[in-house]
Structures are given as C-alpha cells and as structure tokens.
Length: 342
Image 1: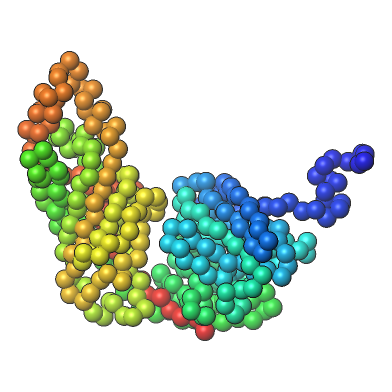
Image 2: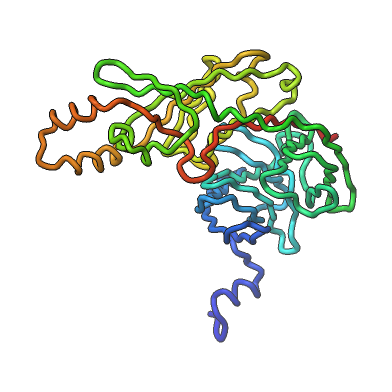
C-alpha cells in the first residue's frame, strides 16, 4: 500500500524509471517520436519512429540491462551496425543519439554480446569547432570494424569521446553538386502505347494548362543520360541523387540496375554502386494517386466515361509533369565522398 504520493513519485522513489523517453537535440521542428518495446530472453528491441515529415535529432533513453550495447538496425535496407553516439546514465538507462530523417524509423537493439568490437560510446561530432554539425552535413557510421565519416561539406571534423579523447579528420575538395535539371525525356502511357516528350525545365504537372497532363494519374517514366568523370567516382564515393519532392512514389534505375523504391521524404538515395565513368542512363518512374484523375473527371459531369476517356486522349501531352511540386523544382545530384576515421 502506497499513500500520500502519486504513481510517478512512487516509481521514481523506488528507482523504477520510464521505459522510454526522448529529448530534443536541436531539431528545427519539435519532435514527435513513438516507440514499441519487445523483449525476449536475450534481446531488447525498441522500434523508434519519427512521426513528423521533418528531420528529428533526439536522444532516446531506454531501460535495458547494463551489459548490453546498442545497435541500430534499419528496416528499409536491413543494415545493422553498433550505435556510435551513446552513453549510460546514472539511473542505468542507455541514452542513444538518433538523427532520424522525415518519417524514418529504426530499431535500437540490445544484445548480450556486441556484433563487433566496441566502436560506440562517443559524445559528439564537431565541424570546425562548432558543436553538433547540421543533420544534412555529416553522418558517422560503423562499418567493417571502423568508423566512417560521410561528409557533405569540407572542414575539420572532430569526434569526441565521453572520456575526453578526440579523433580528427580533415575533409577537403569535395566535388560540387551536378545540376541535371534540363533535358529529361518523359513517357506517358496511353491506350495505344505511350507518348514521349522532352521536359525542360521541370514543372509541376498539376499546374499545367493542359487538362490531359494536369489530371494525369498513373506512372510516368523520366529518363536522361548523365556524363560523369572518372575522377568523381573514387572507391569511397557517395553519389546522392536528389529529385526534390516526389508525389507519391518513385522507382529509380541507373544503367539498368534497380536502385530501389523511394516512397517517403527526403526521396534521395546513394546510386554510386550503379554508376560508371562516362555516360550513364538514369530512369525514374513516378506514380501519383488516382484522385488526380477524378478531379479532372468531375469537370466533365454528364458526359459518358467513354467520351471522357476520348477527350483526355485527344489532348497532346505537352508540357510534361515534374518531380518537384513544392520544394525546389530542381532535379540534381550531389557528389559526396566519404572519408574514413581511424
């Protein structure tokens, strides 16, 4: 029997801490994080989900056994690696720093034995002596027994440990972003096959004056050749394809190699493994929702479905649609090189 104090006070007095908490680490928008915790005989799984369509920088506090070290498992790719930035609190819980992209989810997993030698437990990363570099500039990952810095801007990076130790890495001469906005060919399916048109510059197809384009629903195929110098593709290169904001889903293919389906912000991905020196063919298939066509159909009330279909087929497909609906109106790639930290 407990009397004279709330449940929260009673639990705190008896050092029964919350299973999950998070604190903001400088996100532009107040984070909203949700979680699910599952425990087996020898594992703890925390499914941590960013509930906003904005990046979130948070530290999550998780209640686990002290003998276990955190790992980050990515459900989209299946990649698993020891957490880099984490520490044990005085209450025994483990605090893990997470940089979650828009609508991103990860598993924070604790096992009795680490997959690799201990590589985690660092406090922070600084760029040119500025604490906590912006989320879109740097990323430190554990790979093949070493820590690797994926730097998107030049500078002097310092990795600081909780014990005061520091490791530095200098990043110089990163390749400039390559703008590939103009010159896209776009193919639209029709009942007789497909219609192809040239697209330059990119534009939102729902803003077109042509109803056949304005209310098109389905999958449009974008393709373009891109020439890349061999010097831009070293062994450790990261080539980030950034099509801006996509509505609703895109399937990306480079030189005939499937580079995945991009279905949530920020709609970017590393395509370095599919690129080659010289000419490369990039193909992106974008699919929107059927509601866009229904909006157009509503304008033709009282007309039969056959007549409506014929009316849309007769309109020439020009100008074509685009990826960037709200954000940039730009289709470009950032050529980014990873630099190792030993």
